[in-house]
Amino acid sequence: MLSNDVRPAAVAGMFYPGQPGELTAQVDSFLSSALPVSTTCPKVLIVPHAGYIYSGQVAASAYGLLDNYRGLIERVVLLGPSHQVPLHGMAVPGSRSFETPLGLIPIDEEGVKRVSELKNVVLRDDAHRQEHSLEVQLPFLQRSLDGFTLLPVVVGLCDPGDVAALIESEWGDEKTLLVISTDLSHYLPYGSARTQDQSTAEKILSMRADLRGDQACGCHPLNGMLLAANRRGMKIDALDLRNSGDTAGSRDRVVGYGAFALYEI
Image (tube, rainbow, N blue to C red):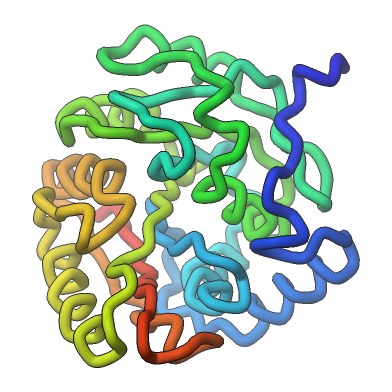
């Protein structure tokens, strides 16, 4: 495989351990302490994307739900916000695989071709090259599933209807899992963050597709998913709601994290 066919890990050793053994141990520890709240396989997970010491346990509360279904899910459609590249619309990669310290994940190349034909979707490797919002989900998926192809989508400034259209086009059957990557409030004092994040969580649970960037940095992919989920009459559960002041940081300026699971009825 040619080197430019692989999107190498960009934040290994920073957001999560760069050594396979250490990474496996940390993710497995998070997953083993997660408390699944449902015996039904989720269709959608909403998870945070900070460094693992800050949000790893919150993310694990969602990924832990996959334990009984690790052999069922064969494809993951992963959407997250753009932090590094100014982007209008959505971007899919030209790479044939994404790499983490745990190995290569094959890209769903047919899915990339399909969504590339949709409104406001472009092929841009630069949007993916340094983007952590998608990458930090990959080791959790690698430890939670037996094997899968990946359709990664970086979402910039974009109408929720366009995001929902992409999601609907790739909804698939029970073998497809959809993952939305987003953190919540940023850099508020601890008490203010708790109040705002609780309000945001209530909007997510009500499937309101009008969240702002100060409420959730992944508001654009999240709003699109909530729009699609509301149309489908899905069931949603809140799994965890914390911030960096609860996990590994100062309480002077915190970042909020939430985890949610959505189910088809």
